[in-house]
Image (cartoon, rainbow, N blue to C red):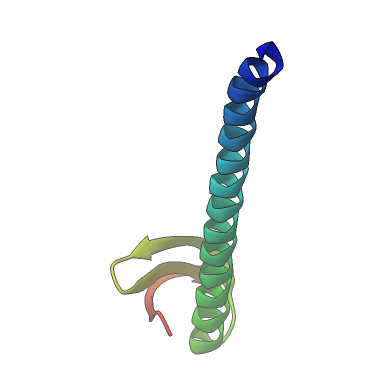
Length: 82
């Protein structure tokens, strides 16, 4: 009977660890998606701008705000999500 009592809390800890791993992997997938969206927005802004160096990419409501440096001038472009 004591073996059953010891298995209960250990099983609960194991389930908690599994839930933590699932939540962490879900967060990692969301982070990866956002990085991919930001990189795509940067590429599209460079194409639209005719090149230049991307200085920053910031998330906005319906897309990204991208700052691009070209010919000594900083341009701010809004790139809609696709």
